[in-house]
Image 1 (cartoon, rainbow, N blue to C red):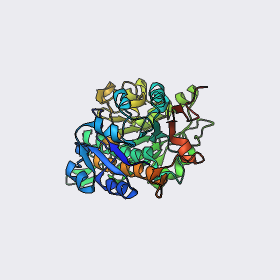
Image 2 (cartoon, rainbow, N blue to C red):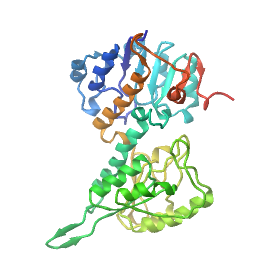
Image 3 (cartoon, helix red, strand yellow):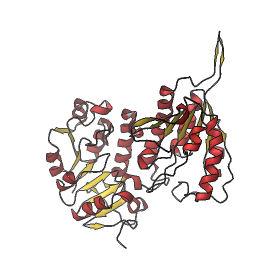
Image 4 (tube, rainbow, N blue to C red):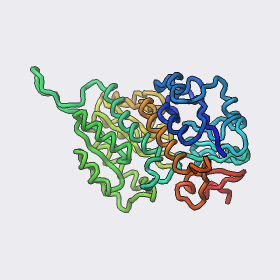
Length: 378
């Protein structure tokens, strides 16, 4: 029987989100779980310790105590080695794990006989939508990218009629029309900008147009998307054609937001030095993929880089946590929905259903083994 869930404070210095908020504490307790949280858990997202306590959580000062007592551990970032060592064998650990790039971590989790669920690996299906943390966080990140750019830019986004004359609307180009890209388009339109968008998948044109933006068509030949909805990786020839066309669109844009990520692989370079030199002085580029290699030449994680011709390239770190209160609420809902979906109310236990598509998609280790087909040793 699973009795307790522990949520530790995030150890990564830039992480502002939390996997559990007071509202979900109440729901978890209704399932029959004792909820333990480390003091200060929600301070970066404006949730006070007293809020958690009022919701029924037990507060502790020492994370080691929580790890020792926990049957389930929920957190945003992947655990450190010392934190894995503190967990009891058989504990269920749920977080983002970056499994394609963390083979040593996955092996360590298996060796410690921990059951580990990776939130990135939740399948993109209708049933799993309420647990899809990648999409919920990408939605907020798309919004945050536009707000960040608007705050840094030295002109306004909307058209404005003034006694001195008319101010033309800013031009925004969004490259990559996934969840984040669509939200960026919608946000820029709401703020009054003139918006263009590009994606290698022609099928998204209708979505772009429905938001009032113009879709830039580039003939790349055979392109498509994966069964998870991600754009397929382009050939070098297709990338070069794309860059040439993007240069023309970037040259007329005040803000460019690149959102091209390849799940589990290095992000593709979309804007090279030649493209940046053709852009207007003072233009803003937000490299959404900077943490996975970057879409823009010269972008740096957590920094603003002054490129050629006065173009400012921003590489935001933890863009998903730019508005941490809402991000945490959405993320906590994803975590709760996952737990609730596999919860046996009568036995008060988490069920590892081997025939379940969602479980097969996100369970990485269990019982001393790496059980996910993508990460087993061949």
